[in-house]
Image (cartoon, rainbow, N blue to C red; front, top):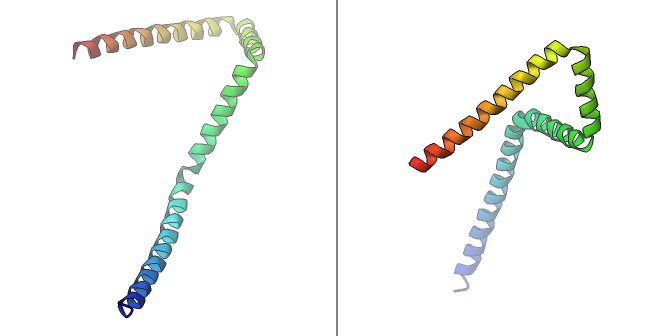
Length: 104
């Protein structure tokens, strides 16, 4: 029994060393592959920060909308109508989607 144990221990040590090396290679590959999506995550972080700021400063947003509405009333009205139409279309699509899902 004692002769088999040293061989087994060496075998396990070599196996462990190979696995540690392979793990390091895989970590390097993941880091390289994530470099491609890093700009997307940076933009997502910026959008999230902007959303948080907008929610924390509603008066600034309302004031800005009011200034644009006074400065360009015709354009603002057209944009408001398009936004309202899009909102209503989205609500109808949700209603149709929920009705369809109940049928099937």
